[in-house]
Image (tube, rainbow, N blue to C red; front, side):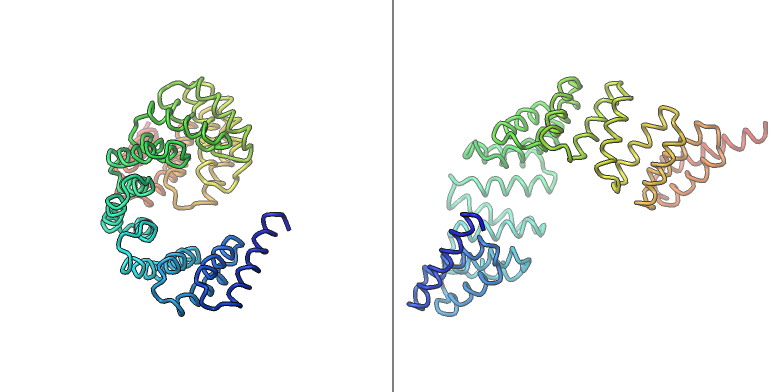
Length: 351
């Protein structure tokens, strides 16, 4: 048992002792529940808070803490009930309303979430969390300009908050404002230089700006920090391919597949890269692997059809295009590809 765990266990014993001596000691119930939660003993914490509320039904901190424990235990509706109880007693309680808004946002009850985040801001305009929450809601609703405005306010209020910089960067990225995305992913990395995911996103933004050589530096940094993160190799490979360095791109795709062999998308991307280089036999292996993992992915059938078209095996190509059209019968592009393949095959037969 490490020192921190020993300290928590010591506190649990202390607060339990206080309650044994005085069953009306509400503060010790609160402290005991918090210590049990820190120790990961959530059901025990739930029991402590419920005992507290049996004695003091209107204890707002007990209601908020119990709501938080119930949320962690995945009892979201019950958690909402306790947050509402707390707000009935203290309508301006920031923590209760923020937690309520967070669950509503998570459940995609956006209008109520927005309303409650707004009330948080009215009661405490200098606290950052509600602005960040509104940013998350509006980003989820794909109202990106509003999301960016709220994230910027959160960052302004708490400029050293790593998560806020990441959120703002991701909204800029989604809104195709790649230079701003670079700025805030870079800031996120400065705040936490173990954040390899922000490095990959930073590199992706640089690739979108056609600054491929700069992007390679950040992909490599991410790979050094976390060699097991497949996405860094996948994105690096895509950037290398766009830059024209297709052989190195293949190496990165192979590494991504090695790290995550059961991801259909990665197998498909490697297969496409191999097919483009005429390595059809090996490409087929990875196409088949992608199909084993996801039989309903029309993109795999289209790619196989394209490869067999290039190889001059139109009968095989048509078979795969037909399957793609079956999976996506409303997709006009696929239907046109299928029709063109049939025309070419028929024409060749006539000749």
